[in-house]
Length: 471
Image 1: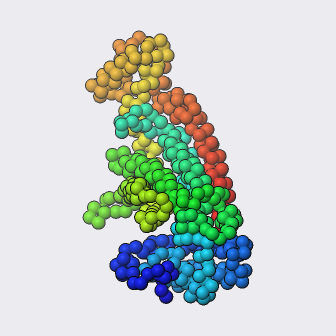
Image 2: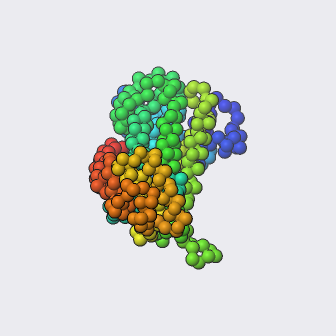
Image 3: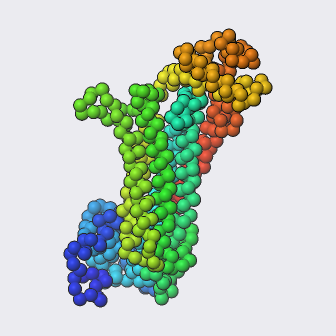
């Protein structure tokens, strides 16, 4: 069968050109979305009287047969067909004859491919919001078990102040909540229909774009045909949000890698998420978090790649824009893999409570509380800060920790010290003293867990609602 656009040409396309310009090897992933859009388009053509209903019915039946063959793996995707749109239209014409050529009435591949990608990303965004909610639930499950587990909190990777392990985990719940909200907000722009914009200027046929939008569940329609076919902001926005999400996963991965090392020994990842060494039998390597950390770079690269492709393109469509898909598909697969693995990895993670407590008992992370103690007794905080610095230096020089000091040793630095200083310096006291909204005190952490669980309930309701709409 000759090219569907070949009437103007006198020569066949050079084979190398055909292979270089074809996108079928990767945009075949849009097959279901392409047929979904075509079914809505041809239904509209019938509704508007542009095609007779018999032709509409024949085309729709043919499209369903093509879709079933694709799902069964019986459809052959070949480079000569260029892209998914031509591949499906060719298969349709082979199935139902010349009437299949009427499907493309009133549209262009330019608005068709944009529609496919809107449909594709819309589905993926809902999927990722759901996966993030599952990850949050896994974190909360661990947090609930460790509302009394204390570990050192760090700044500059130096021990800073004791915190609840549950509080640390809830920090990531908050991060992932922002990721969820960004994806939900982007849904509004993804859920906008470009179909009907034609190649760039609209179409002479009396189509009903809002009817197509209703058929496909789009809430809005592009108001400018040039913008409709040339806009890839919605993909850039997705890649940007994906980059931030991967950055969060990478930060968490770094901590899991550190915590599972012999030097920290705070956690142990389940064997199912680790690998061994081919030469060192004692090794248990945290491969999943290491790969998530590593794959973050490719997601960043996909974002920068598309930004670079689009930065100099005049309106409207240009062949450069074919480069919008591979990075998008790669990012989707990378996110899917990371999020599908992370929740069960966190659920099965073992926490070494004793090792965390040992770390807290053998550092100076309670030093700030001495400064607060003296400040509450009337000493200016800056003066109290200097006093505590001297106490810490004295302790280090004498191979002691703050709770090891005698009352006589405390009072040589300030007469304001009394016996209650020992209660103030207990890790539980240090933690629960931070009893402010968002702090690490146990009751604040319990409130944060309850609030997060309620938020997850709303997220899951959103996923259910939009999954039903997109069926």
